[in-house]
Image (cartoon, rainbow, N blue to C red):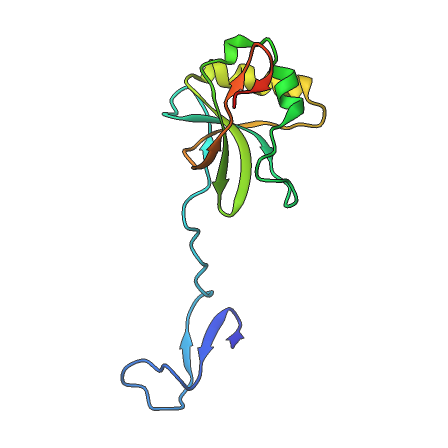
Length: 146
C-alpha cells in the first residue's frame, strides 16, 4: 500500500526487530525495475559497432520475411557490400538491421533507405544485439543468396 509517496508494509515480511503486524514506513518512491540492459546509444564516428536499424518486424511478419522493398532499393548499390544484413532480437522485439563498418557507410545506408522506401524511418544506433539470422543479399541483383 502507498501513502504520500511512501510504501507501507503490513504483515508478511517485517524487518528485523519489528513486532508482527506493525506497519513500517519506507521513505521515498518505490524502486523502479531496472531494464535488463541500457537502451542503445545513438550511433556515431566513435561507436565501435554502428547498426542501422531498418525496420521493426510486425507481430504477424513471418520469420523468413525477406524485405522486397529494401532489396529493390539496394539493387545495384554495391557500395553497401561491406554491410552485414541481419534480423536481430532485442528486448523481445525483432528488427531488420545492418551492421556497417563505418559511420559514413551507416549514414549513406540510412539516407538510401529513407529516400527509396516510402514510409521508412531507419535509425543508426551503437549496439550489438542478438542476431537471429543473417540475410545474405546479392546487391548486384537485389536477390537473397540461398
